Length: 119
Image 1 (tube, rainbow, N blue to C red):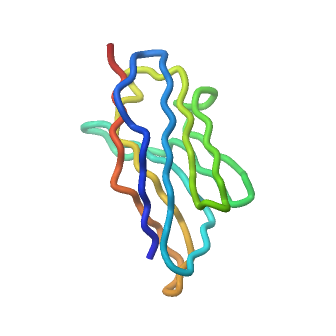
Image 2: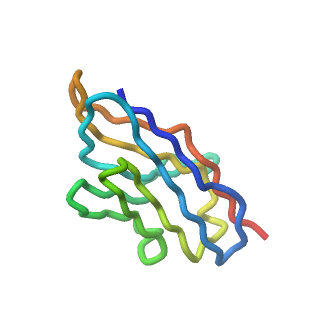
């Protein structure tokens, strides 16, 4: 199993920045992809960004040019730098990891961290 601990959410004014972190821990796992998804009230969960172990990134259209995903493979940690935040970025942000463990491949989710963009 893989456990994920997220941090960095909060309240920020429009145009501001936040940085999210997600650290993965567990026994005998190998991470392939780390990423962030978000879910706003009344909406479906959507892709924010993903990054592979080799550093290949993928972004949702609504965050391209404003958000940057990165990872520290040695620490099994993924980061999301969010700049030029807008009210429509308000959502619960979830960390996701796709990894292999002793029982096979799995997709693991963090508990979510609230990001609120408001005056």
